Structures are given as C-alpha cells and as structure tokens.
Amino acid sequence: MTTTPLRMPSVAPTFGRVRLRAFQERDVAMLRDMSTDPYVPTIGTLPADADEADALAFIERQRQRLTTRTGYSFCIADATTDAALGNAGLHLTQIATGRATAGYSVAPKNRGSGIAGQGLTALTRFGWTLPELHRIELYIEPWNIASQRTAEAAGYAREGLLRSHQEIAGRRVDMLVYAAIRADGPDIGATRG
Ligand SMILES: CC(C)(COP(=O)(O)OP(=O)(O)OC[C@H]1O[C@@H](n2cnc3c(N)ncnc32)[C@H](O)[C@@H]1OP(=O)(O)O)[C@@H](O)C(=O)NCCC(=O)NCCS
Image 1 (cartoon, rainbow, N blue to C red):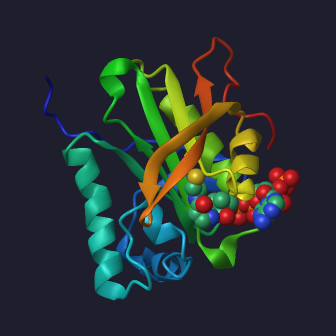
Image 2 (cartoon, rainbow, N blue to C red):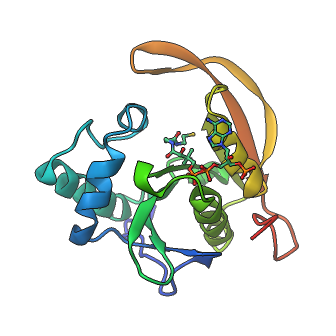
C-alpha cells in the first residue's frame, strides 16, 4: 500500500464561475460565516460559531487529508477574484472499491447563485482524473432540497432512499443516495454551466 501523500492538482479544477483550490489562512472569515449555519457543524468537523483558532485548525485538518490519503478537501473560490465561497471534498476512504463520496457547503453569504452545483461539477470532473475511481456518491437528507438540486445540477442521479442510514446531531436519519459514474464521454458531471 502506498504511503505517498496525495497532491493537489497542479491545475485548479474550474467550472463556471468557480475554481477549486487548497484552503489558505485568508479563508478564515468565510469559514467563520459558514460555521454560523446550524447544519454545517453537524456534517463535518467545523465547529458551530467557529472562532479564528477553530477555523485555522479546520484548515490544518483539510491539509492532513492529503497526508493521510483520506481525500481532497477544496475551497470553492471565485474563479475571478479568488474569494473563498465554500468547500467541496472528495472522500477516498473507500477508494479500494473504486468508490468515493463527495460533500459540499457554501457559506450563507454566498448562497443562492448555484455556486455549489458548479463546485460539485468541478470536483466530479477532477474525480474522473483519478483512474481508480468509478463511482462518486452523495448522501443527502430528504428535507435538503437545495442539496438535491445541487446534485442534479452536477449530473448526479438519484438512486434511492437509505432508511435510518446514520446519526446526525443525535438523531437517526434517512439519506437519499445520489451517484455519478465514470463514463466514456468527456462531459460527465456537467449538465449545465
Ligand atoms: C446545499 C448548499 C450547498 C447549496 O448551496 P448554493 O450554491 O447556495 O445553492 P443554491 O442556493 O444556488 O440552490 C441550488 C438550487 O436549490 C434551490 N433551493 C435552494 N434552497 C431551497 C429551498 N429551501 N427549497 C427549495 N429549493 C431550494 C435553488 O432555487 C436552486 O435551484 P435551481 O437549481 O433550480 O436554480 C447550501 O445550501 C449549503 O451549504 N447548505 C448547508 C450545508 C449542506 O446542506 N450541504 C450539503 C450536505 S448533503
């Protein structure tokens, strides 16, 4: 088993108005805004109402994912200004099976203009550059319509409902599973710009 750290792509994955890059310390304000969303802390490691130290620790944990080969955690940034807008991650703990899961959030100030769909499209296209990857899964709670719309915008297909799939914030929840699979065409993962 290889222990070489993963490396961020040399060319930042880009789609529409966003590009995916490594988190930088200057992204702290965006992360603090993101942490004010009550749902975000329940689905990741960014604590609620993060202070500067919490946000910096989060950034360090994202870097460690490369070292531990557990995945790629990208900042979704504005392709023109490079301002941080959200995050998109490809989680590779199941990569031996050819599968990965993806996750994303957009800071409240930056919502409502399709950023997540563009970030997920860029992430998905990047995923297909990993030759061992054949399937990317998303797990979305049934109430989370914005996330379902995001998945569909990035070309993911809804496959079904997984009942009592996991615990979030102390309650057992159902999850919709969406997936994209590797295909021959170059445009997989993007149904609209
Ligand atoms: C889900 C999330 C990433 C979407 O971010 P976004 O880029 O701002 O998405 P948008 O606001 O552009 O919404 C995408 C679509 O959902 C629709 N939508 C947004 N909120 C909605 C709501 N409450 N009810 C119904 N539709 C909604 C939008 O109209 C848009 O539809 P369109 O594709 O037809 O234009 C963001 O809401 C978020 O970070 N939520 C908290 C974290 C989270 O849930 N992450 C995903 C976990 S699976």
